[in-house]
Length: 205
Ligand SMILES: [Zn+2]
Image 1 (cartoon, rainbow, N blue to C red):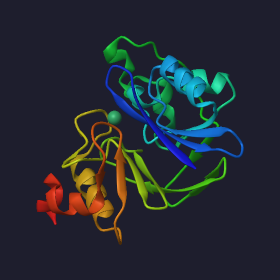
Image 2: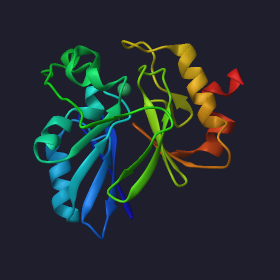
Image 3: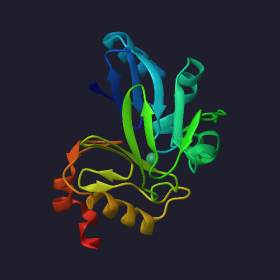
Image 4: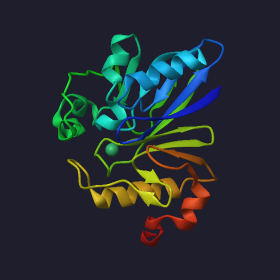
């Protein structure tokens, strides 16, 4: 497995690629909004996007999911956030983006184990940033979306956001056993051990 990372779109979303060298297929964690960025990486690195796993429905994370779906990729998102892909709760209309109907191929919920393109990822529900936000855990990696950032956390002032829930969700991550590399939806990478010491939400312990 090779893990690639690119920054995609106006709001600089971290898009992660899990590439299975044996099949040439890739799974994207949060595709971002700019299809050209994805196409360029596909070409340069010589793989094909087979699936997109979304941490939540906000347009900056999901914007080109529909385009990728039309080209054969399967779209995965939580059952709760699925309708937001096609309505204004994805915030796209606030940034001049047109809403497009995007019906996911698969939905998941807390505790589900996804096996996609040979990768095994566990879904952990982390509501707060949106009510359907999730993190994905794979081996010693957490893809934390807009729930947990380096020394910070996601906003809760968008539709379906809830600050009490976000506190619970962040603490749920911090209380996982052992250490993990944390790959968030924006900004720098971090580790769980670093966040246990320096995250702004530690005071809620
Ligand atoms: Zn978001």
